[in-house]
Image (cartoon, rainbow, N blue to C red; front, side, top):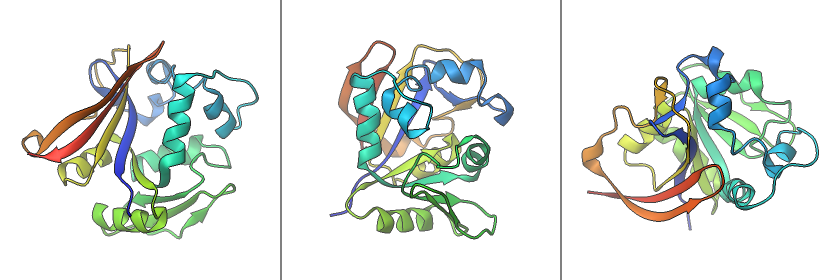
Length: 206
């Protein structure tokens, strides 16, 4: 049985998931947005940031998200930013399918992350990701424009949002341009922790 297609992001209270400029991606606002995530023990281990880190419900949710994911899909903007920022052992440890117009051979990293570059659209990338994931889920990793394309195409089964007590004011708004007339949401979980509220919604067509 095929797994679900989902996205999982941190979002500010005013609806933004990233700054507009890649130069600001590791700036103060982004760090505040991810303040709940970066101290977690699982994240520190996965990014090779050293021993220690927090344990608790946030850490459990991050680990659960990682464990359910058999493959990821991302856009070129996210890949370009990550190629510079990720450690040599990129943090996915599964196949990753990059939606792009650029022709490029697949790129294998230590630790099991293999980047495959897909030039014929979001559906082709998802088909390849589903096949690679097997019975596990496919995560649409980002960025915002890529997530929105999948939402508007009716290809997402589940939203997972960590709502952070941060205001951006501007940047990349997750649902800017969403085709709201075709998407209905059913609440699955709303769970508060010390720093964020974890919201999960199942998607159904109207």
